[in-house]
Each structure stands twice: as structure tokens, then as C-alpha cells.
Image (cartoon, rainbow, N blue to C red):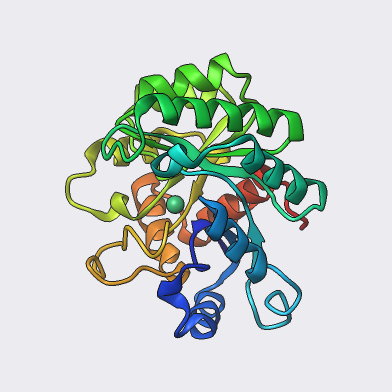
Length: 260
Ligand code: NI
């Protein structure tokens, strides 16, 4: 069975056919989904999706996270942190994030991004929860902030650095999450990372509805397609696809401390 360690099935893109999307995930052997929040409204929608109604028999197991994306760092406030704290206290989230830095789109200023990220790194340490880190064209600053603010564990979501940066993240105790771009033509550096990473530190994700793997690129992504990502990584590593999937699922359980 497979785990999609980063999906956004709470988004409106799935309101029309969410039940079918979840059913297709399970039919493809994707039995566990981490539903990642990134602002107040998506955090709340993730919560609604992880109740008992959804986690019944014949459904994949869904777990939620809560955080503030670097795009929305301008909306950061102490009250936002209190909201995440309350969810953690109620046992409703398995990680803090996604949070991080995005110096590609810069939808919030770099200073706003640094402030919100640093606060969430410290919150994750306080709550003893892993971090879900978004890093786009900000490798150096992300690593610096993780080191300076006492990050303990987490995952580099949709990893996009080279092997040198991967080593630095691994040394920090982080997992590397491989997404759909590993199936794209211009992904030599990512394939190198996927080949060299230790087996017990790799996980896979869709980041759906974004980053749809080849050959479905251009269409809406969904958790069932994490199978294509896992198969590509297994091929690169010359491992048996089922064995790789089982190892990646075990890694996800360790990362998010999920029940067996
Ligand atoms: Ni995401």
C-alpha cells in the first residue's frame, strides 16, 4: 500500500467528485493521505475532511496538518499560531505546515516569509510535531532558518534541490519527499537525489491538484497518481516497486508518527 504524504484534497477543485477521487486512491493502493493545510480556510477544510465520516471502511485514512504557506505569510499573526496550537492539543493534526519560503513567486515579502516560517519552526518544536516545509528557490535561507530556530524533524515537501542540499536536509533529520516532477524530462538533479537518498528517508507525494505526473501532466492531479511517482523512484533506484512502496509507507508512518 502507498501513502500520499502531501495532498490538498480539501480544495474546491474536488468538491464535485471528492468521493470518487478518494475511492480511486484506495483502488490504486493508496490507503493513507496526509491532507495538508496552508492557510486558515484550507486548515479548516482539512479538519472537516478527517472526521469519522470520511475515515470509515472502504476509504483511505486521512490525516490533517495545519500551517501558513509562504505565499500567505503576510496574514501571519499570533492568533494564527494559537489556532494551530488548539488543533494540536485536540490531537487533530500530525504536523505543522505547510510553511517555508518561496522566493520564486514572492507573494509575501521575504521578511514576512521569514517571520512566519521562523514562528512555525519554533511552534513545531514546542508541540513536538514534524514540519512540512515548502522551499522554492530558497534552499540556503530555508536551511539556515531550520538550523537557527531549532527544527527537530519534518519533511522537505516536493524536494527540488541537488544532492548537496539533500545531504544538509538529511543531516537536519528531515525526510525528502519526491513529487511528480521526478517524472518530467528535465529532472536530472532530482533523479540523482532519488537514487542516492537513504532508503529510510524517502517519501512520495502528489501535491495534488498540482504537479501532475507524466503522462497526465496538464490535467488535475489526484492521490491515486502517487503510484506513478513511486514507480518512477523505484525504477531510478532499481528497486522492486512493491518493496519501495512498502518502505516509503513505513517512512511516512515514522515521519508523522501514524498508527500501524
Ligand atoms: Ni502543497
